Length: 328
Image 1 (cartoon, rainbow, N blue to C red):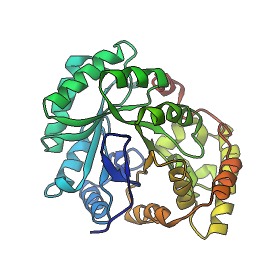
Image 2: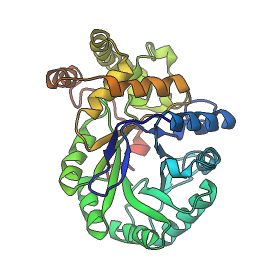
Image 3: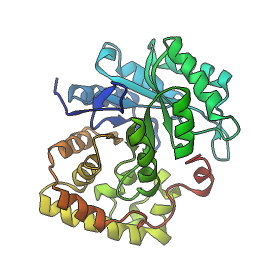
């Protein structure tokens, strides 16, 4: 079994591989996924040293956790298992959200059953419920820790003030927010709060939903879920593609892929940051892990930052309905 560089998630003592695996795409989000192939992929990731696996009860509405549970049979002690709760189905419209204490308990027990485990290592509120005080939600999450069903608590897409209030109820181990060269503004505002509080930062979609891999060269290649995201839509595509071309040029100079350069830049932002790129393909996992061998000087980090300045991307990072549910 390979050993990868590890980082601590804040001051909790929880340590994970600097590059983990986001599992959302294993539930048909970016194209059809085969469950048996997904199980093999997860196991291959673990064999390569990845021990940070991130799921949610919203990914396939339970399907993702079931697949992950299958993959972890006999391997549970080799991973830090993270999952999330809080989003609810709302056919025909944006997802709903539920942060009520009763629902917190119900959702956790359902996730434990689907995963086939006795304890979840890192349990996130996936989206903040604006109708339930964060103190009540985190209070219920704290009870899960006391019951031995959860080890550490996290928040996803929470604004700085919400994070402070939550942390006052029970230590928050990690905050998860979209973070990449193309999606920086809110993440960097969040890190200004999490770092002093001793909270780790988990960057999801660190490759800009595939944009920063360089694989999407032309607007005609945009399909499926990406087509709903403003930054991939025709009005914004050319401007964002031009930013990616700058990343590609620097990557050629460094002798690495754009994805590796992007992940190396992200990890160079600070020891508090870990990344959970998602994929359905083993060669992509191996490519992503190659980023751990890319060394960037401070000057190179600054050059990459300047090539794609914070706020330079065209279009919002989610469609309008979903934007109302982030940074609450």
